[in-house]
Amino acid sequence: MAKYDFDLFTIGAGSGGVAGSRRAGSYGAKVAIAEAVRVGGTCVLRGCVPKKLLVYASEFARAFEDAAGYGWIVGETKVDWADMIARKDRELDRLNGIYINMLRSAGVQVIDGRARLVDAHTVEVNGKRHTAETILIATGGRPIRPQIPGIDLTMTSDDILDMKEIPERLIIVGGGYIAVEFAGIFRNLGSTVTEIVRGDTVLRGFDRDLRESLAGEMAKQGIVLRTRTQVTAIEKEGKGLAVVTDAGERIACDRVLYATGRAPNSSGIGLEEIGVTLNKKGAIAVDEWSKTTVPNVYAVGDVTDRINLTPVAIAESRAVAETLYNNNPIRMDHEDVPSAVFSQPAIGSVGLSEEAASVIYKEIDIYVTRFRPMKNTLSGRDERTMMKLVVDARSERVLGCHMVGPDAPEIIQGLAIAVKCGATKRQFDQTVGIHPSAAEEFVTMREKRKEPAKQAAD
Ligand code: NDP
Image (cartoon, rainbow, N blue to C red):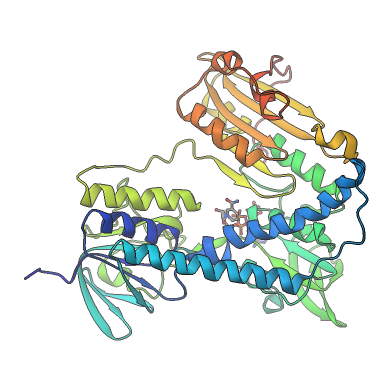
């Protein structure tokens, strides 16, 4: 008789947990996965997928405007928010079903309920105990808000997806991915949007030219960016709310979205009780194999707070499954992970920012181009694209590619392969462009920027 009920027991059926469990199942491992809410997790149900559907929905506003420049006569347009949300929810239900089916067809047993570790080999769900040789923690993260007076009057990204109507006046607190993405969505849907950031602009950690280009384009759309501002309280005011700032200002609005980061879901699972070490932020400490301080317990994805992106969680989890069940040891490679921000215009970025490269490399060359995308000529839309290459002057290796503009995520995904392969600027130059496209500008940049390299400001 087998020593344990399962070879692998995964806690959390989000993108990370599902990917590793399926991969392990496909190699013949006996796998169970427990999920406390709904199979699919943050990305599918509360994050990337519904957000991107709303980005698509909101982009029609721009398309209707642009169409006039191309000779279309567009009648009255109006969005039915309730219908849009109902359609989004139907799509999420469909995806939830697909995820459950994919798990089942890989032979993975799906257990509904909140799991808790009893010991290093035993998990309890709904009062029933299951034993497993290996445990995989993939419980993700959750939105966090600073505890200031009136914070319960505000929403997180979880709540905004289920709002009953589009707010006339929306205040967004935070300058990260979620904040700029929802600023774009609701501005296009007709809200007055004010974004309050504590730093000097949005998207700390990204290349400064990217950050400034996006902030400039957001301003042109009428999004009000309040920088170096902290919110001290939120109060009820009439039928709406008022946000009180550290400058003593009161800004009236209808809804407030807090997008001030996320925290790992690592409490209440019994981790520390069985000897799993957490770091100061509550993330599970893991080694390069995603192994925790308890040798048979692994952790992947946002709960480990390495690079908190869906494809990273998936890759980390599959690496565990390959290592344990396919005799194919894989350490997750966290170098040159590309990322996108679905702001409007969108951002795509891979490799080092100018500020980061200038700290590591003695001499760097910078190539920047800014232009009006062809589509905006007839439409007259006042929006510019920015592209940038960061190059190590000595080896000519391209260290970073950055873009703000339409299709940036699609374009940067392709360039990420070149960066990952260590392509040089010369090889970029030898690549023939596709004409007419925006992407071709990445292989036709000739002039080095003359100013000295920029250093990180915050
Ligand atoms: P981020 O970590 O991206 O940004 C948090 C923002 O909130 C920063 O601007 C930060 O400012 C600010 N902030 C933090 N604490 C406070 C505070 N107490 N008061 C005021 N401002 C504060 O978090 P998000 O919530 O936007 O997103 C969470 C994660 O989800 C991201 O890190 C990303 O990994 C993932 N995600 C990825 C997406 C994608 O790939 N397209 C889309 C959405 C989310 P400061 O910079 O000064 O610290």
